[in-house]
Image (cartoon, rainbow, N blue to C red; front, top):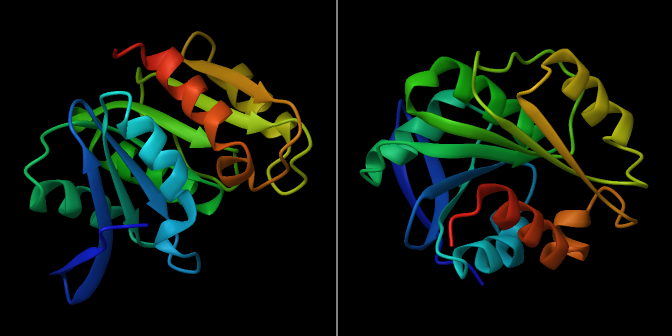
Length: 177
């Protein structure tokens, strides 16, 4: 499903897929997962006039190296599970280029949020890996900046099993159409 490409940065090969046109959303996929894991979600979001770049990495610096490679000046930065932790680190390191942070489930690992940047959490009500309480705790920690959308059911893999609902939540929040 992906149009997988790669490039070299700092001695590492970074794989990515890029589709759509419009404001950019970079989705981080950790290297233990297949780059296509979020392909359906990516396709649905890109069909709503977004440019979605899926980036497979465990290095925060690779996120903006990929955006530089694609001549993307600024973007929403997001990820699912552990990819969200990497996205948070990347967003904090490059705050001036971040329009917002999208977390598909919230890991409790220590990863700061960039000051003053909006955060959208999309989570599943029955996710046992990144439970909804994590998203609520993040919302409480940054009042007025974190919005939470909870999808009924779906489990941890809701971005795949409930891709349509997740895509709608993203598009509705960003209201880019």
